[in-house]
Image (cartoon, rainbow, N blue to C red):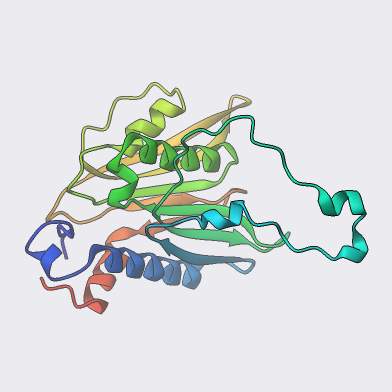
Length: 234
């Protein structure tokens, strides 16, 4: 079952892309949980149009008066030193893989890129910043971009953020896997990148979990399964 265009007619008028992304992340996590060894588990997480309750920044948390001094009970924060525009990540569709050896610890992540992630420079920066943090903590990462309505390439922007010299991936749609490794006594970043195209099959990419374990992520298998379960027309 070849890759479809979920963001343009005719499919975009018959199915909601965010519902498909949500389902795809769920089935990827389910597939991972069938193959992960004991001590690991995968969880899907999909959030769209995340909004922060502004009142949360202005309301004081109730405290027990018996545990506070009169001075602390009357204390209020001063005005902030600076107030600047700041872009939060508004969409997040990912599968997170955890190790339970020392409590739930994030060891890998698969990111399904949404239109909001590619929309504006600040949102692209927020997404690549999250990916940079994962990689610098040694967390294995895969990003998958099947968004056809915007041309930004977040893989290339991530490489720029990391100041890595690599040939640009000249593709609107793509999937890429990243893992950190030691080479000649110094840390290196291994990269697997695949250009995608509508009507082509999706690749298998390696997901390297922090600690050395790796698994094949069969994107085509889970994509096909999601299309069937969501009744996506051929």
